[in-house]
Length: 251
View (cartoon, rainbow, N blue to C red):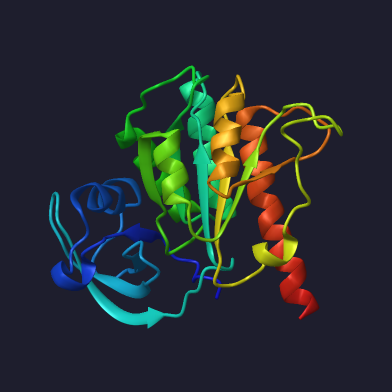
């Protein structure tokens, strides 16, 4: 369902507290200048969204009454998890995360690889970007975020479902790293967990590709062009959505 044309606010404990968190209240009162009685939408970020109205206001307080829960279902099937090594430029990573949320993803895990140029990343700013992107694209699901996860631990997390690793190694009849045909049927299984692995700017190491194959991850390709990390991630993510959309329309 398309949401109503009303401001959307995030309040993870709205059913228990009936108030907007302080930062959201500040946006409602000081930026949008909303007042008592005005209608809004509120989501807990876990798939639920309500039509509501502002019941009381003060300098830093915004009380809310929930009027009606609205139906909302994510428009992709299964669980889509993006495992990606962060880029050296934090701005490129922030842009990627914003766009990934707009397209639709359940979880983003920032992994540490052998060739990673950025080994550590702070989660706080990225979480704010994710929240803003969720509200801007009018979703009721705030994806999970994990940072600084070693590659070998990420492989263990992706043991269930369909896992694809995209790399740039040469692919010919003599290659150790021969890429396989993409499992399109599995990617459209509404109960599947789909795990997409995108490497750092220096690509996955040979050892990491072998480890991934041994863990059941399928080496894959996004075409002949060599893509930047963030471009590859969005291409893979959008590709899954397109396949699912085609499958849904055909059925």
